[in-house]
Length: 291
Image 1 (cartoon, rainbow, N blue to C red):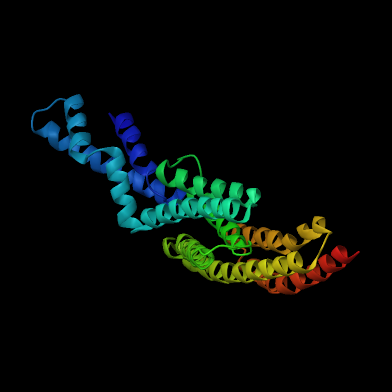
Image 2 (cartoon, one colour):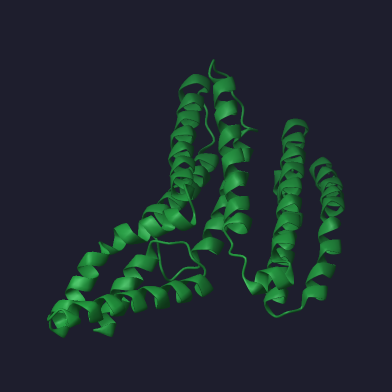
């Protein structure tokens, strides 16, 4: 009987974006709830198997209950993710076809990246994978997707729809940023560990720094593509500060999990230097492109 309840509850939890700690608590609560309902039915004369089936049947369809819990814990996040992913797919194809038929040229690389990240977000929203840390994976996808869509603003538009495309692309990027902050900060439970370690401050600081670095990287990338005639192979240098920022961010979270609060906070000084590092790498890129 208990194994049946556990399998049923796993289907419910699979539809939510709970962390491991939240999943364990929710799993235990739901199993206890089903066991209590089963005991009530047994008290009314049903045998153990019939009581278990009635308890699960009265609880509702597993996927439906899971999605209801998801909406209760994280209101409208699923709808926001669907809007982001579907809107991004439509916009990406529209920009690609506009460039292809109006300008006679298109950026196939940007199309592939946009479709890949949009489809991945859509897939994880519609088909949750229980074995993944969905919050971490979704955040990573949102960061990459936001950067890809922001890079779309650097594309050449020579059509009457250029202003419309730019406006819609900007809205997509802003929605991605909102979802990153929401998933990382506002949808994280105020557990004792998070309150004690100041995890939300680390998230606020690093996400703000990441947005600043992304804007700086896109600006320098755009400037390089306008003025440089060759030497494009050196563009990878512009992404080094962003990659280093991500590594330091991950290290800080690991240190907080192990209770190393002071060491984790000391890394904020390293993150403050990242804009300077980006500018230094920009100088290296300019010299590399000019040589």
